[in-house]
Image (cartoon, rainbow, N blue to C red):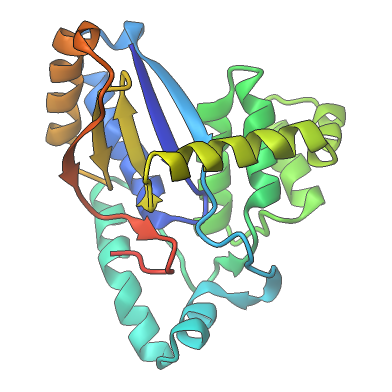
Length: 233
């Protein structure tokens, strides 16, 4: 059974949702028969990378609010992350376009390392303050999960992988996906947002028992997510 996940490594709730889903998968009796397929989704394709500016400053500037208000807006995500053992440092996280990171994810998919590269990119962006649009940083991140450096360099220059990123995003648009994370279980049941682990487990069990009955997507739940208008709530 396939679980497709649309995600952006700039999205804190994608990071949180990944861990909640993984916990559910651990508790799912047929987890060895579940294939997780990661899909690219850019929350802001036009974002200009500026490693001198952190996420809080960018949020305040883009929303026309104070720095204090920006900090308050991120508190919910920070608390939610703590609940699953993650540390988000918005003070350290730099403003970086994620398109090249998605090209690296597309490469990792061909090597069965998509989950590993997603985790490494999330950690690099949200916890380590690394620039996920920098070729040198992406090279090191790729190496950290076992991808050959030459392959990373070729991937970052690859038009084919750029096309795959855009294919994923076109698919999301055709499905009406406007925020991430977005999970589709065996082309039938959709879960939007970083839902509680119990919800993911329930949908895993339900979709497992019914996955042969059709492919129409039914959106069961909507939870914390990030939208293309820059809101994470």
